[in-house]
Length: 194
Length: 255
Image (cartoon, rainbow over all chains, first blue to last red; front, side, top):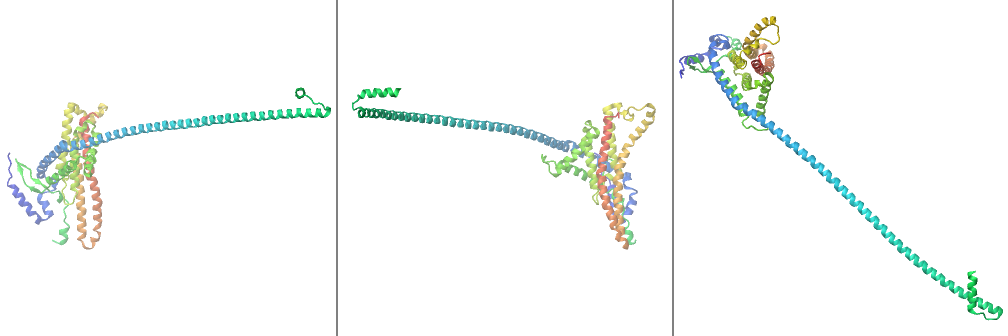
């Protein structure tokens, strides 16, 4: 490489060192015109611009931009996958809610069936007990009625005997003759049946 | 020398002077490390710091600087995609480097006592020449002679073409000039205006009774500074958008 720091460098340095004493206006005159248009300033700026911008371009295109692009891509992937996962969860939750409602409905129906059955059982039991009680009562009534009829019959038979005896004694008093007891009872039956 | 003269001589041009920090010459070409080189380096380091250092953790949930880097990335990516189309995305690293470098250089140049890289016509012209060279090279590489359709608008009758083609050629040739001068002139004019108003403040302060008026140009500097911030961002944007437009011409030469 033909690298040489030439001696004019020191001369330029010397020239600059003398400037502060001169003042701004004098310096501008000394450099000769408007700085952006001074052609001797072009070369060092272009050289350094090419080097620095070149390095910047390489660093950006090789390292920084792929990295930032990767970050953005990963983020959008993560957001998409998270959204997907949350959608899955939501579907599952909805399915679980539906299943839960179904279970609740079934249990309620079961409970209602049990209730109905219990009600029916109670009703039939009540009915059977009632009919049983009623038969028992009617049987008792019938027995009592039988007893009453018996008593009545016995009482009536007694009345008949008394009537026959009374009739015999009346006839004896009137006629003075004793009437046969069997004839009297036969006559009585005749009267009674007529 | 009266005291008034010493303070009334702030030179608004002084800020554009090139100071050789390490004088150097390689094979007959002066390659001195100057203040311009220093600020180019600072701008590039700013971009690298933002795009490389701030994204080193590569977190899914970004921090402030990483969010800024991502914003810049997406901003430029959208710009290239919208202006130059999907095929233009192969120039995305180039446009990104260009935009971020010019933007950071413009913004650094607004720091008081700093140096504005883009206030030098040779720098902006070098960028413009790079862009146009790239456009022509890629246009010819991709379309061959078809690239010349750029100068022949589609669906225009022949008599009009006779007038239109020279105009198109002139407009194409003036692109590197307009591209470079626009950025250079905006930054240069802004910095000169700021310096001139700063000089007013100093001159008024040193002028006895008139010094009461010194806050007026100071307020003007504040307003101008806000404007210059806008110009710094806007010109970086304009430069890159035009680059994308020209690249789009190289990709699709027939309008």
